[in-house]
Structures are given as structure tokens and as C-alpha cells.
Image 1: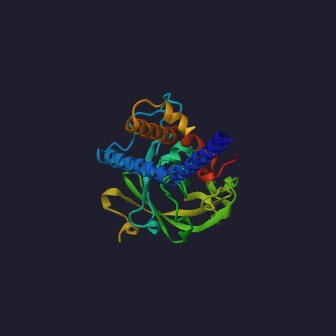
Image 2: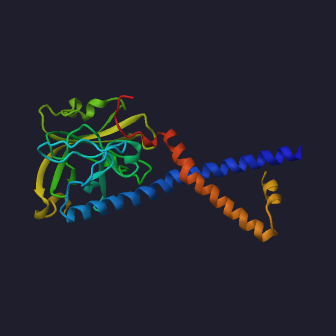
Image 3: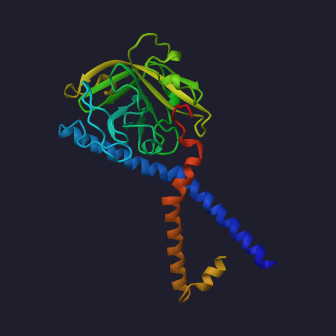
Length: 234
Length: 53
């Protein structure tokens, strides 16, 4: 009898300790890892850009095999998992900047913001759609509900600053509402094709029942040599 | 359970305490490195995209 009671209580303590450790992992450790990965990627992008090689040298696809070289006019195609831009949102604070990488896989989202594959490229005609974590993994989009129409979303790809202005949002929708990242999203109020930006994150903060969306249009572009855009100047 | 492990560790009390500490650290490492990353996707915080699934 004594052995049974002792073993049972030891089991309870073990399970309790496991839960505490898991919570610590979710709340704290994913953030530590993600912050490290994000600043590494930003450093890597800055190094790449300062060397003048904006386009990545090697190209590998998701399964590790090399993809065929495609020659298209305009910007180079993005590669899954590879960061290609840095996003700044002054509303989230002047020190807020996150790398944007291609693909919305779990592994990509764990290291920063994720560009939906198949949506427009940065600054191009169409809808440049980006997803980010609201909670865990560094909480990049924690303050998402504070975004308001008129707020700037600034991105750079190493050669150009792109300043987008938010037109609508945060708009709450359901996870299956894939129309929000259409080239001309119906619910956004846009009626004509243009250069748009869509940001998505989860809602409620710790849940997954809904999504929050904001839409923006490309307001201005500026070459990197010309200095930071007005939206980033204090 | 823990008493059984303690009794089967070699050495005196100090050596056992040291080995226990190493064992605990090893367990925490395995949990953080392998078990939790596996269990984490079962929770909803990862769903930040819109999709058809």
C-alpha cells in the first residue's frame, strides 16, 4: 500500500514538473531561440546586401534537391526558408524589425515572418502576403490589434525601401478565408489590381479559432542609397 | 521510483547527488531538444496562416 501511494505521488510530481517545464519552453525558450534566429538572419541579410550580392548564390528547394533555373524579368524568385527582406512597423516600436522568409511552413514561422508562397513578390503588382506568430517564437505580431489605417509597414530587400500604408484592419476572419490573400482581396475594399500587402496572424492571442488581417497598399518606394524613408525617421 | 534510482546509483551520497543532477540535466535537455518541439505543434499557437485545410 505504502509503495503504491509513494509511486503515485512521485508520478504526480513528475507530471507537474513536466507541465511546468513545457510552459517554460513555450513561453520562454521558443522566444529565446526565435530571437536568436531572427537577429542571425538580419545580420546575414545585411552582410549579403553590403557585399552587393542581393540574389542568393545557391538555390535549393525544400527537399534539398536543386531546382531548375528560371529566367524571369524582375526580382529573383524566392527560395523556401530563405530570408529575403526585413520588415519595419513603426507602430510596434522603432526597434521592431523582423526578417521575412519564403514559405509559411512551421520551420519558417519559427524563425521570423513568413511570405505566402505563390503570392506577389515584394513591391510587385499583386498581393504580397506575410504571416507571423502573435504569441510564442518571439511574439513578432503581438501588437497586431494596435495597427490602424494610415500606419506604415516598411520593407527593404537590400536595394529598395518599400513603404506600404495600411488601408483596412485589423479585420477578423476565419482560418479558411483564403480570399484575404487574393491579388485583389474582396473584403479589403480594393476594387482594382494594385500593389498590395496583407499581414495575417492568429486571434485570439493564444488561440487559433480566427485570424486577424490587415491590408495595405504600396505608398512609395525609395532606393536604399537615398536613405531611410520618412516613416522610419523619428 | 526515485528511491529505486537513488539506491542503484554507485558511490557515496555526494557522488549519487552529482549523478542525479547530471541525469536531471540530461532529461531536461532531451525534453527541450526533442520532446517539446514534437509536442508543440499539437497546440494552437502555430496557426497563423489562412489555408484550406
